Length: 229
Ligand SMILES: *Cc1c(COP(=O)(O)O)cnc(C)c1O
Figure 1 (cartoon, rainbow, N blue to C red):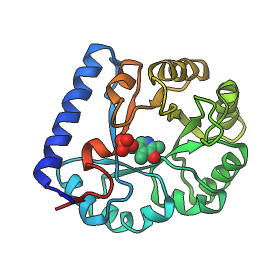
Figure 2: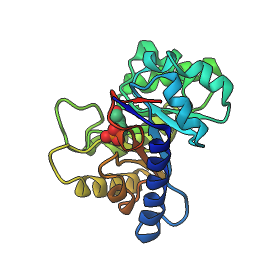
Figure 3: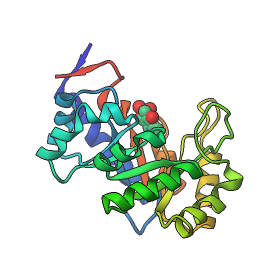
């Protein structure tokens, strides 16, 4: 199956319009909500279609997959920013820091230590979000909500990381609103500004609850498996 560039353009315009409306209605007034276009499973040519439509922030969930398309794209479009939104293994930290601009998925102390040491070597201080397992789901990554505030402070104070916000993926089978509200509360307590929450089906609601970054894949690219041409 394939999806046309024209359709992608409509999707992007539609989403940007919805983001603006949601923000004006209830969202944070002091800053613009950033749209992170989740390009996982889409190849270099498909991603370039979306870059050419003006999109500049992208999300990938696997380091290795990101390396298959992004080095050349980033060379060509130097203002593109890439967010890591999937689990990060400590043995991939060096590669992740070399390619990504923002790490959204810090969820354990061992990883905090590794990020600290590798960023020092690379002479970088990338913005980092802490992933919170907001629904306490055993199969999901993220720190326990009860530990999130303390962990964020430790990452800032002890490991010197540039902790800019919290990120979460609420349970799929429950209404997301209460989880978004809880993440907002934790961010306030931790004293961090940004909230990465909301995906294709609930990004407007996430914005109502204070999201500063929404991670949208299928609503832009079509279902994963559809080819853009
Ligand atoms: C895939 C993914 C998304 C995007 O999901 P859609 O439902 O396609 O918008 C957002 N966040 C994370 C962490 C993802 O892995």
